[in-house]
Image (tube, rainbow, N blue to C red; front, top):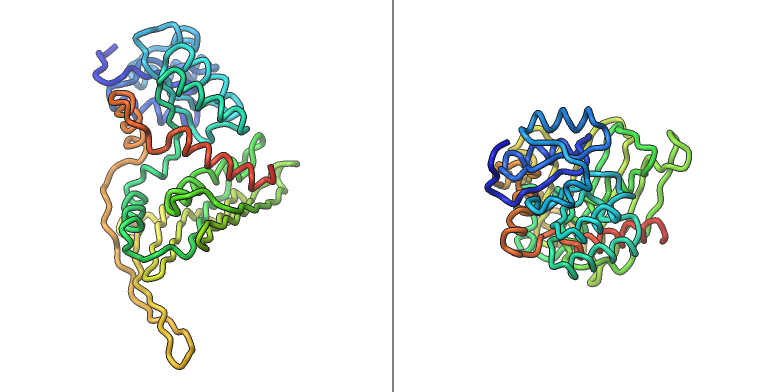
Length: 321
């Protein structure tokens, strides 16, 4: 096995998403071990990434392993993270942080008590196009925010253990809270399910912010085509981040539309879309690198436990909890 130059990190769960974490931590020279309940999966991903297979208990007992990246089912996040903190490890955990406020608060408290990093995988916060969008909004390039909406739609993958809200919407809630810079005053949500009893295939969320800003999310895996689109409307312009667009030059566009009033009647003055520049980096690699940097320096992650707790609270409020 190669000598690591970054904080040694073990990936817990090497399935659908964990294998991507393993690849990226490996490319960052930080992957120390892989753990998965399926021995064949663990062995395959360890072989791909030139690392070894370890049990979770062995990882906790190994003082050379400084951090864990958890890609297990959400209902396991709190238990795994709390054990990792108790063993002195830094923790990266995939979204959502947890499924209950109590578990989320316990995870944050454990990170604080052990002085360890807690970071949550709200991936799109690390997408270079969203970073450029967020910076433009923060600089006032489209004036004060009026409203924003996000569509996260596709046909499948159908889940049976979680609905479209919990599977898709955490990313969108995280982005919208970052753009508005606050938690919503009001959250309403509803959804419907047809494929699996008791599991909503589509979910809609409305959020109202202090100052009059509004945000809307539509998430569904029962949709005829893929659409990942965030539209942000300000007083002097509008920006579209369309991650599902296969043309990189069209993923992020600025519209300098204006609303003018003549004889008391408002009318739009339209403009052609302007492509906005953004860096060409893989979002997941940026996210993993940010976690390692936070472990190395003690810096607070952009998507730390408290940011993730605000997202969790909005999701629970959308379900009426």
